[in-house]
Image: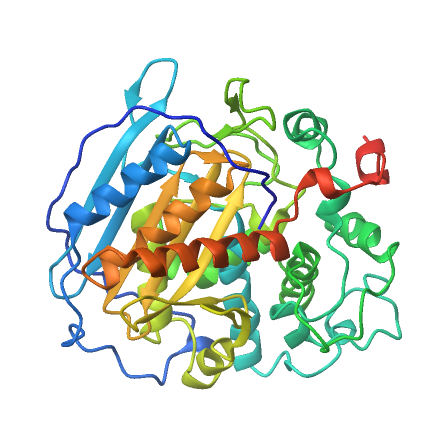
Length: 434
């Protein structure tokens, strides 16, 4: 995930709700090397209540109240309880209602795609999770004596410094403008992180770092001998027919219909800043993907029902470590405990202009993706998480659970998205280099 700062009191307009029945998920092929041996999910979770779409709309209204101009969600359910909800605007200048079919930058949801590619290589016996990553990387990417394993990169226990701390310094909007249109080489991003030294003994603790997934992107390219976008298309996008998902670094625009992505100023009295266009090379395989709610739901359905990974590799992905009292992290995958006892898996994503949640039941029977067009606002992030409850529990969380979830969300923010203001470094080599 990328970084955001403190609370916002900005309020925005509301929009309309659209609810309808969606088609069943399209069965798709996967690479032969990653053919699943996991049985398909049942048609529905018999014990799960239907999603409460009215309560979902109310939760999304809370995202607007927290400071996002617009927000939308799509629910896909194998029992037919599916639909979309949208609230607010996709453009504060024209006051155009947000388009629930629009594309957006997904931020760290990209990590789950990268993780799947790595685990497909594991399934092909081309990569071993417990072997030092240096065996699968070009010479010099990591120190030759590095003991960091592939698993430790995937579960954020590598001890590698997060190079984005050197980019996201000072005033958020001003800092962003220094690097949004720059094109970085991934090896230079990693080299910047290495200048800070090993932060702790690999495997000894959890510390979220975008550096891990930039290294993994280089691993995918080195082992396959192909550029990351090509591998992504061949192994995931084309087989699943994810026609709204693309990795276009360093192209700066979002081609399809989309909401403008707004960056909240540190000074909440200042207007929202249009952050939509950027190369995203600075976050590369850790967060540069563009997608849609329908594509992300389809991706999670395919993942949880065994269409992307064999049983053994999916089980590895779901090897959890506790991050907060109600959240755990696996291999490029997060798990949340909801108030009704249900556990959902997926990932969150934050990048300048957009904040996203995409989650699924573990059996693949229901997915939801929520996208808000505002970042640098922890209240928006927390409000989006509350939207999971009416989808998977059939009701909003009780007040006590909502409070504890908000505290948990703030803890995740502190662990994974420290305030740019907390950084004391000056202009980094990354910013000084054209």
